Length: 92
Image (cartoon, rainbow, N blue to C red; front, side):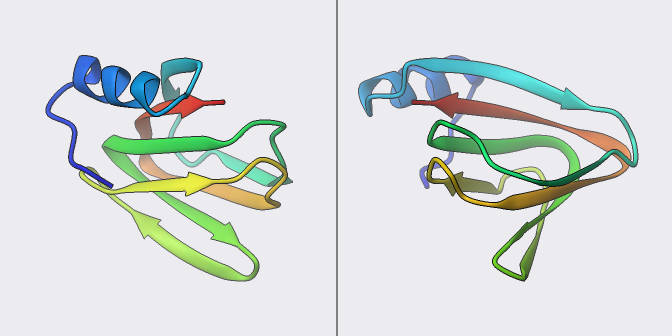
């Protein structure tokens, strides 16, 4: 995943790649989101805080400057750190 220089850069690259919605999500400290899926592909870039993303039993600890991609229908759970987290996400 290419490092975006700004939200506008992230948005432009995502739209050029065929994503149809791009937004900023902010999560409160210590939020836990139990296993779930989304009906869209997602590509995200962490810009503040930290999160743990678990997919198929494997957990990734993500910090600012790191990203992830999830195909539609992927079962996953999310846990956010004591400072919460903010990330930019593109959906299609």
